[in-house]
Image (cartoon, rainbow, N blue to C red):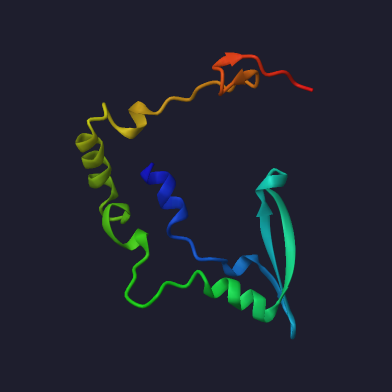
Length: 119
C-alpha cells in the first residue's frame, strides 16, 4: 500500500515533457486516457483554462507534499514499512506477503463463481 500511494502522492500536476506546445492562446499537452486502455492522447486548452486547472494542484502555503514527510518519506521508508507491518500484525515483509494470483476472466466477483460469459 505504501509503495502504491507513494507513486501517486509526489508527482506534480503536469510535468514539462508532457507540454507539447504553448501558443499565444492555446496550450497543448499529452495525457493518457485510461478509459481507452491507457491510450496516449493530446488536448488543447485555452491558456487561462490550462492555468486554472494547473493551479488547482498547487499546495497552499504551509502544506508539505507527502513524499517529503512522515512514513512515505524516502529516507525513512525502509524502517517505517517494517514498523507498519509489525504494528498491523501482518506476517513477514511486503515482498514475502505479496502473491500474484492468476487472472480468470470467467470469475464473477459478485457470485464468486465462474459464470461470466464473453460476448
